[in-house]
Image 1 (tube, rainbow, N blue to C red):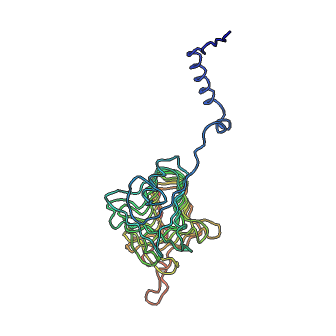
Image 2 (image 1 turned 90 degrees about the vertical axis):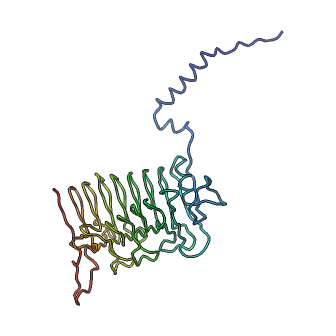
Length: 326
């Protein structure tokens, strides 16, 4: 005698599936994480100095642009490292035909991974042929950029319009040695409405050299808030003892405009910045305009505009800190 099985009613099956999906959505986050699939961070290695995009980043060929595009296509939280063949500084000439390097997902771009790195960056991004773009456009939260040389770009070295970016150990606006101006225009780093970002840090490895740019070294603007600028050399060379000015009149090494509650320097060891003003007749080490709650602490301002007419001149073309709260 054969046994007959009843088919499970389809409407009931659909209802059970929908009920299960609903239960998942109302579970506490700690429980949802146990049953939802996990997106794992990926690692991409740049192995060519060419700037091209064939849609693939793999061990055979991966440009920086392809690596960034791969990050943008994923869940974020990835790492981009470097292993470009050849010794010394490897220059990536960003091309205008492909546009800017735009970051839309969380990532760590780590130039210190290039073989041969000791203390000075070995990966250079040159905007000489890039057209009207920035070196890097950061539009995602939790992006870290370290160990790069970024120069010759026409729309700032780095633009940040996001939260929790970390910029450390870079030369922005200088040559690969950090000793001469090869500037970005109109400035080095722009924080445009950004919040919770860190530029520099309290260690020598975290220090940025932000010098030689055609404008502000750092511009904090458009209601950018709770950002920290620490331990950088701004308007001086990699040694901190010779001027490599950010040029322009009425500009500053750090310019804070309509942006509250930002910190320049600090009380911790190594938190202070070394700032020298620009070459313009009204240039300042730090400008604060229409902003409140700004902390300026522990910085050396006006150094080293030096040995003028046999005198150590701390204020030549550098007016210290200018505050205008409107």
